[in-house]
Amino acid sequence: MSKGATVEASRLPVIELKDPLFAALLGWLIPGLGHLYQGRTAKGVLFMVCILSTFFFGLAISEGKAVYAWWSPDDWRLPYLCQLGVGLPATPALVQSYLVKHGQQPILGGIMAPPSDPRELDSWYKDLNHYLELGIVYTMIAGLLNILAVYDAWGGPVELEEPSHKRRAAPAAIPPGS
Amino acid sequence: MAGLLPLAALNLLPLAAINMMWYSLPLIVVISLVYSATRQEAMNAILAHAARLGFMIVLFMVLIMIVLAILAWQL
Image 1 (cartoon, rainbow over the protein chains, first blue to last red):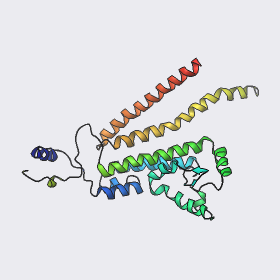
Image 2 (image 1 turned 135 degrees about the vertical axis):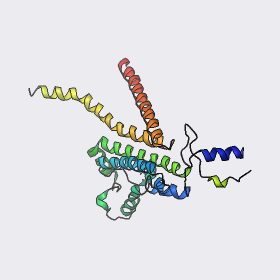
Image 3 (image 1 turned 180 degrees about the vertical axis):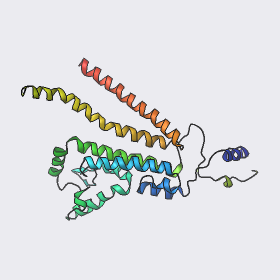
Image 4 (image 1 turned 60 degrees about the vertical axis):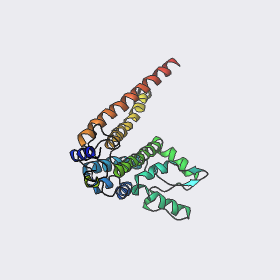
């Protein structure tokens, strides 16, 4: 069996995942960065372009209001849990939330800042109509897709039509002759 | 002529509703590509997988639309 595994391993191309946990962390911070660190350039660029363009498109059509973090009985911002999956691009919402909560003016022109009261949130829905909902959907999907990409950076492709990769273990890790 | 304008605008309303569906197109493309990329490693395999998946998503949406249209027509 081990001999078969060695032959199989030598016949198949090896995906070098380097440090999978570090790659996963990089992939969460910036979509695709973990794959670029692993040298999987094409997939890294694909993840980066697809996920970031989806996130920023959703942010743009909602005028920066689709992503904000807020926890109160009036507004449990559960979509932000999905949006946070996109990593650093979603983290300014945490800063804005902290500033607003402590009575300070939000920065960055109010992008990702929570509404000051429920009436302001109502006015967002009135002004932006379905574009606010669309922006929330786009940014949530971007975050959820990046979780898939992070898993791919950590463990390699989930399944293949043909077993054309080998995870983590280098050929040298298999004891020869065992 | 001026009296026809509201009628024309009314006729265009379903078209505007259909146009909202265009926003699903980028999502279908992105979801297909990213999901396929987590299943495959080679770019050719990713693109082929994404094309199949995108087609299946569109097919599923069309089937749902037909079911809803039939239900709306019957009711």
